[in-house]
Length: 186
Image (spheres, rainbow, N blue to C red):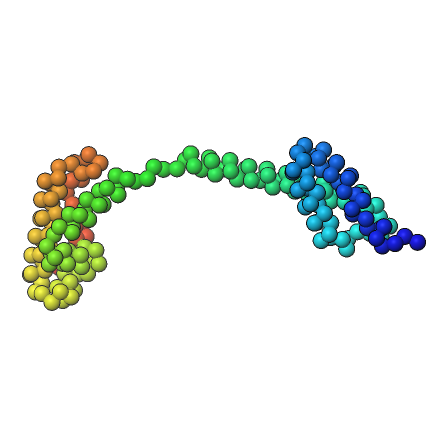
C-alpha cells in the first residue's frame, strides 16, 4: 500500500522543478523565485491534485503556468510603461507666464487701500451686486461706486507704470475688473 506521504512527495521533486525553472528563466535567482511561487500555488491548490496522478507532471505544469503568468505580467507592465512614455511626450508645458501674471495682478490688488480692496473684492470676486456690496460694507451706494472706480483706476495706473505684462504682450495691458465691463451701473 502507498502511504500518503510518498504519494505527495514534493521535496523529491525539487530537483526537477529547479532544473526546469532554470531552463525557462536562464537565471538562478529568478528560477528559485519561480519554484517558490509554483510550490506556493501547488500548496494552495493541493485539493485539485488527483489521487494516483503524476505529481511531477502536475508540479511542472504549475511551474510552467506560473512562468507564463509572470511573462504576461511583464509584457503588460512594459505596455503600460510604453503608453505612459507616449503620454509624457504629449504633455503641455506649464502655464508659467499665466502664474507670473496672476501674481502681478494679486500684488497690485494688495497694494490698494483697504476700503477700495474690500469694495472691489465683494463686487469683482464674490459677485455681489453694487447694492448688496454697499449694504455689506454699510456704506452708501455712491461711495461704493466711487471706491470701485478709484480701485480700477489705481490698478490701471499700476499696469501702465509696469509697462508690458509678463508675456511681453501690450495688447492686454489693461485690467478688466468688475464683470469685465467699464460701466458703473448697479
